[in-house]
Structure formats: structure tokens, C-alpha cells
Image (cartoon, rainbow, N blue to C red):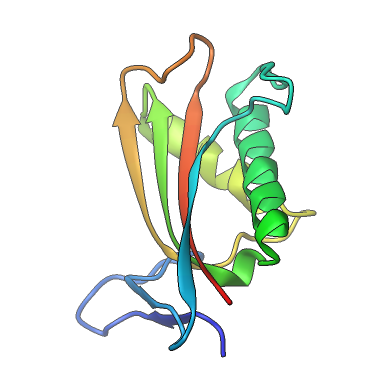
Length: 134
């Protein structure tokens, strides 16, 4: 059984988003640290915001692989975006939708938070992930 996504009729619905995510019974939760566009050598490997979003999602996938999990096992994600505006959010959505070989990222219970700055200068996005694993 996979993560169950619930969107009550009394709450808004969006593609790629779930109001509620419930991990399957018997699964453990793993908490993936905030992923950015930093590579394994701690170098920023993407310049613009769009490329940083794609790279950060790629790092989430690497972490999922290490757990033997996939994107369908994601319960929740929190996105921290430097200088969040409506236009930047739209760019985030576009980048998110191409991050996985051009397919949309699976629905999960997520939050997007605008911040002034992240830990290192130049970082524009960070994403934390909760995933259900065996």
C-alpha cells in the first residue's frame, strides 16, 4: 500500500498537492534534511532559480534512492524560497513539473514558505521531505 492522499470536498484542490497525506500502516517515517542545489562536494551546481529547483529535487531523489524509496512514498515536503513572489512561485511550479524527466512531481502534503535568506549565500531554495519507508 502506498501513501494515501486525501482532499476533503470542503478544502481547495490543486494538481500535485494533497491537503492530507497518510503513510501506510506498518511503515516508518524518514526525515530527509533540507536539500538545496549543493552537489556532493558542497558546491552550488546551479545558477538561476529554475535550475536550483530542478537540482534540489534531484538531490531529494538521491536521498530517496538511498532509502530504497521513491517519490510515491513522500508524505510531506516543506519548501523554503528566498524572496518569494507570485512570479517566483510560478517559476517554482514550472521547475517542479520538469524536475523528474518532465513529469509532474507526485502529490503530497506540502507547504511553501518565503524566507529572506538560507544558510549559504547564493542558495535560493531548500526543501525538506518526510517519506514513508519499510
